[in-house]
Length: 228
Image (cartoon, rainbow, N blue to C red; front, side):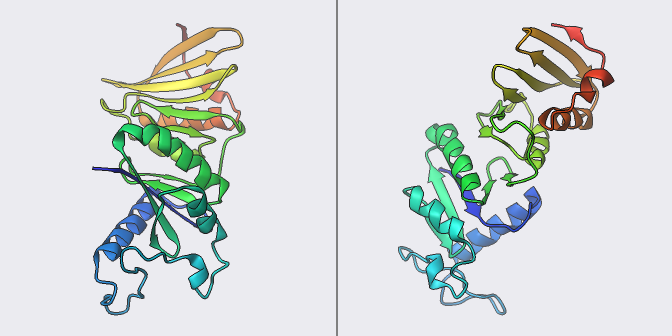
């Protein structure tokens, strides 16, 4: 079984639920006979092997980033004139996914990860251009959008035991689930001081991560911290 990522253009940020609907619709379309679309549904798929390039559309100039993405990533598969699928071996998923996330953002596109049920939007983002989000299941994203950060925190589990935002050489925030809530850690790397606290619910963690990403530090005053 391969690891997949889907990439396309959206004019504004979308929810993970909307991204899942788009992805499922694309897969349903790809499995149908392109000569027999459902009543009222426009044909969006072509026989296997053909390349439905955006320049074949009447609105060919609408989504130039999709063409740029596919041209720069060998092996990308066209699911429709506007949607591209990237498949990879699970063993290389972490490495290749990081490349796909970055290239999609550079081309002005959203990227949907159906394995995790997460969508990468272009905005809104935090204030640190080099900030990385790292998760316990191997995801690494440079410059994640705020919705992705919040959604990723909600996927923590025994198989995905932590989420961290890191500005290397300066500071980071990290969280892990516990039996009665979540452990929340903050490190000031410049002063080499680590602080730790316990919060009862996911909402408190999401709020702290959003504040961290946007350069605010109200969460440091809101919770009782211990020097780790």
